[in-house]
Image 1: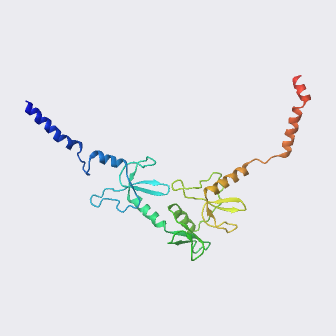
Image 2: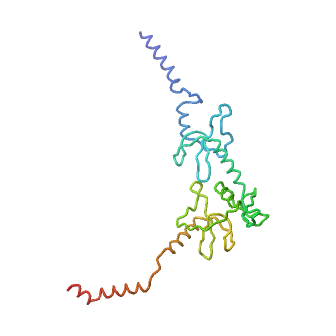
Image 3: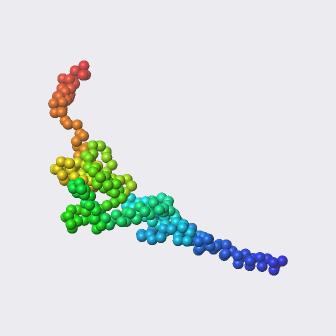
Length: 247
């Protein structure tokens, strides 16, 4: 009997480690693999999005304001806590296009034959035209196409317009400063009266425009009405009026 118990105990000791450290189908201890899944590592420049053998997703993403962030495993974004999503062909295509656009800039012209010129160099002063070449972004592509097809900027009359794209934070309003007065427009291009090139708004310009609108919305003071109010208040608070109210 004792011999049987010893053999049973020995068998349990030998079997236990295999159960505790059993590896899953991917390889490595189960506990360690789960921990790795909870802490995905960011990939700055992904090369392979899908497994060559199985075709399964190898990269997960999170959509940031400035573009895509890629990670090597499913899980949650380290800052926001949002769930990461497996890449799709549409996501890959959009990301690749944005990478291409990052090295491309544009110049707006008044010439109807070539209203938009594209360059393959980085943003800055274009050596050929001497004009500023601005960065082409995903949010600007549609508006650049509109300008190239003949649409021109119109003055914004809305009292609370959207100045920045909620997805990318890019400016979607353009402005000109006319002697301290900010005028805003719905498209890039040139001012219809002065022919000045419109510039994309900045947070500082937005603050100036809002302050300008707040000042303009204040009701003008009617000085005649103001004097009548003061006179009535003086008569009402005079000693004679006070005694009359007491009586």
